[in-house]
Image (cartoon, rainbow, N blue to C red; front, side, top):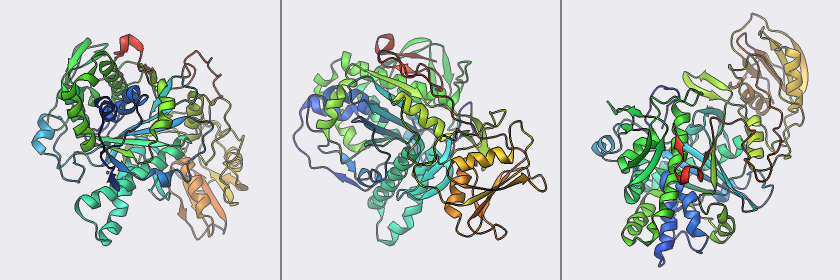
Length: 553
């Protein structure tokens, strides 16, 4: 969920809505209303819970706010390997209304415990969850993407932004298009809507590139939307394995104060539960942001359970309140085909969803910010296996954003099995090495770059023993240099000393290597847990465990 800007505390913090249209309103049955509304909870409960009712009804977008970004982002999306459906749930870090106006500062501070609307928050996507609904009607898989993963991010038009935290793609894209939108005469709510559409498109393209998975549909909710939903369905029960407290002081902390076991929460407490990231450490590395992600996953499961058990769809008062919230706070794409979804929805009935959090190589510092270092090719392989594509081929696009990992003690070159499907520039790469780390050599790194589709040039020791890794290029080699620079988490620069169509890679003395893909984990039996043998950040959260109220740290 959204969070304030702070220095990392186990996890980290940093940072900052789409040409939206109102679908024509038609009469809606109370049960259908419930399906639409549920979709708003935490930006993800939306689909996990609403699938229960969408399975039986054929309309969804009556009166909802919709966005047309999917039409463009699907044009260059990775291809589906089957008839499954992928839904991207976006939790936006925004203390703003749909029209861009600030939320009341006192309300933000007193009820949301989220600092002041004027000085905290913005347009970071602090929650990104990709829900995969299999074509065979089996268990749905949901993967949370850590918000501080350092990857190549993209603008709404598909151009590269550079290396950033994945959560920042939205805000960067929105800021980039704003001057042009103003020049066209847009202002106020219209300007805000168009800017947010650019942000959504950027987020979709970035996720598609990072995970090598297509995004078929989206749903976006902000901080206020979550609060309104929680208020309409309160009280909600959650379960904890320990006592915890996170006082809200001077805009910091979530205000959480919970006991071990079952806790019954009102809306304000529910928000504190899903936002807490301080004073959390399970002893297994799942601190801060990662522990909070598990909280969000467990909360979604609990809401689904409550809607089922309490028969909320029969409570007209709550249904009307929820419906109003959906129209005010939720944005979905305008290509939602409910009939297609209904055929997939049985996987969600009864909370048949498992949540997992993607892992990373280690912590690092980039441009003065704490980040998660990741190897996209490794992440893509894990996601493919989790989604049941154990024998899937290599990624269909270059592994943009691969970064070296300080957590890796020795260099291991990426498996040179296949070059990216997107043809690499025929640039020649010269590699010079100043690192003395075990396994690092200019020759080995050159071979890894050849495996990416480039030509091997000169190799040898770097002059002057530079500390940092750099990538420079000559005339005609910019595209190749950008792709290579993404591998090392740096920015390529043009150099007059580099030959035309040449890229020069200088491995700094602090370079310890680029993490390689791990050997493919064996496929889990059809009746087993697909994530059982896959590297994930902490244990998965099964929505059907503990009677529908999963217990988390």
